[in-house]
Length: 592
Ligand code: ARG
Image 1 (cartoon, rainbow, N blue to C red):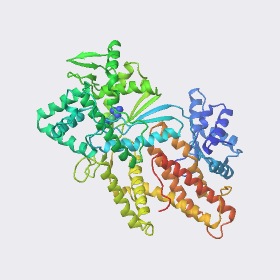
Image 2: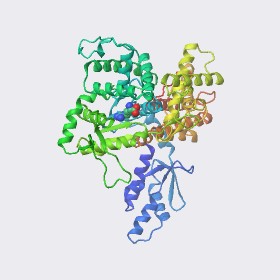
Image 3: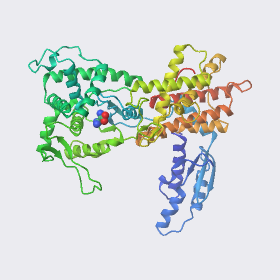
Image 4: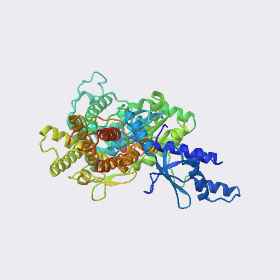
């Protein structure tokens, strides 16, 4: 008997349907949503429907009766009951549950398979050089990282690319503002074209100051804006001093971003950006022209992508503006080309704010017209916003845009307050408590984000996120840490994990929860929906809680073999909890 209990049962029912002259697929067994029995098979109704189509009258309850008779001797089955019009409720046999639990306990991947073999690029993060991050960037980082790990766990080769925004007007703003501050720098002397200093003339703090200064001035003064525009155009046209400055800006920003993303537990394989693909643009545009997919439109170069089927207008892709500048569309198309050349992926996923859905629709259509990719190779995975209590995208207390450090500090403080309130770690040293608060704060933030369907908006509420009760990150950490402490205690008592034998309902329920890990991973990966995995982790933690309440593990009076069996269940649960949490980017402390 191999595979999950659900698979074993599906095979048994499939064989019975086949023997009765139906499609074996009608024997598919599902987890039951109602509490009557753990599993159910609804194939009898469909079978009756199929017969009716052929003109034969059929009673689904009678068909179900025949199936039940055929399956009832099967090893994996304890009890079968027909309900309503012909549902079959299925209770698995304890021996089969025990056997499955033993198989999970020795499986390094606790039931998870890795059948997928695609080469996938995930474009996420997407921070802009010098411009502060906003909640869209935060969500992209958290969701993208979870998807990257999930798809890897499923066996795919996955390459994460931060795709920095480093090719827009913000560069012109930085250049001109720096020029005003330090006009003597060699980068601004048009006669100097090489030998620039290798040390950056600016720090991250300088960039954080220069950009808003220029941007605010430009809002009030059209001439100031025009200077930034011109500098951007000169940069894009290849002015040496400006290119050298751009390199410094990017290097300084990447160093800071690595720290910021690192604090979030987010890691990228590629730190490419828009500027990196700029050299590809002229050749790409020539190719598009020769393919006949471009058009001149009022001095700009565009690609029309609207089709007759479109219900809403889809504006054309802007390749080159009237002033000769490459656009956001253009850098994304050049990036698609670069990825084709360098990686040749089967699939590219964009984890970007839903508000950019139209942008990606346009870009994808152009890439298909240009024969670069097939439509199913590009997928925009949008998401909603994280709002403040006022219902608008979350800002910091001062009302400014989000800074990652501020957000993490807020989460840390909320977590520390919860630890104090619950009296957790009162006797640990300060360093360990700080580290626990960091993990609790991050778990709270990430789980609060990932447990939602991607496209829904949610409200930033550190107090609720850090609660130890309810569907929260800290609740899950607590569940995992509690098992760790049970395992430590078992060690001091000399109790070792042993062969699993299931007898109690709470034990069966826990094994069934463990056994659905692979299904959760499969569905979460297929739908690019981390919340499905979050649901699984939460259900598992709850099943463990009930098990632990009903089934003492180390208590005096519990037989040695039962202790060892339950300890093995606890250990297996911990391994699966930690594997699931690791995929969603959550770290578990040793103790709490
Ligand atoms: N830098 C962009 C922004 O802040 C996000 C980039 C998303 N990725 C992409 N390939 N366009 O809006």
